[in-house]
Image (cartoon, rainbow, N blue to C red; front, side):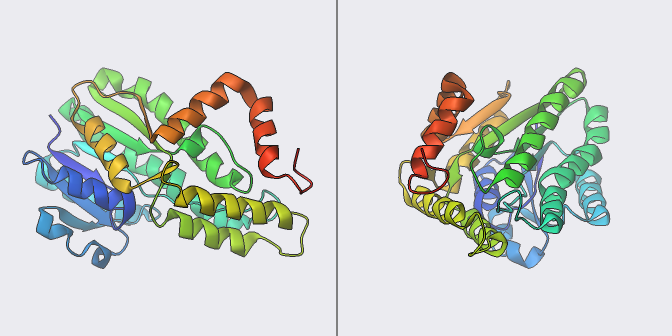
Length: 281
């Protein structure tokens, strides 16, 4: 049975909602982590244990895992939630910023897994819950590098699930669609920074930004972070958690549509959204 839960990126959005969801379980000791512990203000009142953790800093990751293991023996469940989107076209995006995104979204996640597994194997139990994205299943223009990071998470998680199964460790992917968090603001800032208003992709970037803004305002397309927290709770508590959880009806519809129609049809649908530009149908 999972007794300790370590959640990365818990200062806001999905991470914070997950902390609030899991602290109601008296059997759980929930460790809420963030680069800046001050950002976790108020979570201690829920029974969570605030803890400093920067998934781009080796010493910080080692210290956080060691602190949990010293108190509980092993991390019962690792929720790899920390991540963000570095948006921009493949040609225009700043590769140094893209590398920093991969440090958080991919390598930080991978290193956290590496650090918790030895004690999980010794305990013969544990759970790893990796928060991926709808963006790990299909791709939209001006988001290629973000999607690439989430495709990497998908691949690593599929391999990990098979590798650690004999040790009693269960692994799940959570794939949220559009969630009303700070993600939209971060992605827009990155797109604005990368986009050249007089460059060859100006029209594409403008439509991509408009589409993203409208999608996040939609009550059907976007959902609150609590929707994801509920699914993470299931992955952490179910006797037999699923390998994949797609969150929001819209995300499920898009994943199934993309699979059924194929790449050409998906591209054709995208071109319809870009009518009036060089990329329109």
